[in-house]
Image 1 (cartoon, rainbow, N blue to C red):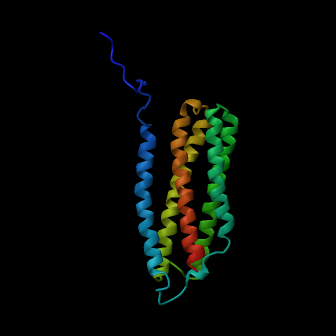
Image 2 (tube, helix red, strand yellow):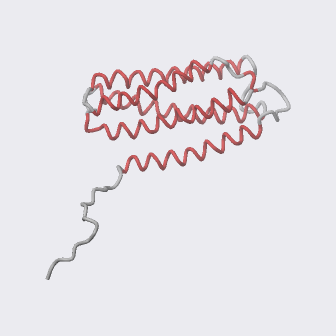
Length: 198
């Protein structure tokens, strides 16, 4: 009796479960995206409804430089993680540190702008609807950048201690996902607040 052959040859199963940390980070990013969406919609809904000043026109026009810093940090963190995959720890540490510097420059720009708005223009979170929605939206983003900088700094310290190598590259990619998310959100926030909001 001859064996019955099937028209499709059997192929070994090569699919495997995705890395749990990436799935977890993807779920966090989806949840955080929903929160940011609510804040952006609230900002757009209330824009121009404040009965008293200051208005969105008071926002700093110098944010462009600090935006370039933050967006450039997405490139440096990507290149850093690629270097770590090739076990080039020195290059990884340099680019990782540069990512932190660029993120810190962005936060410095945010702090300067808030200082100017509060002390020169009297805009606080309770001044008017613009102040409430502006500080809530930009503050939510600044909180995420601060959390990211803290995580990046911890990785840098471990790297300087020689505890980060190629075997941790998957974990570094997960942290990179978060940082790319923070940068992508800023593109939306910058467009809404500093371009459309004027």
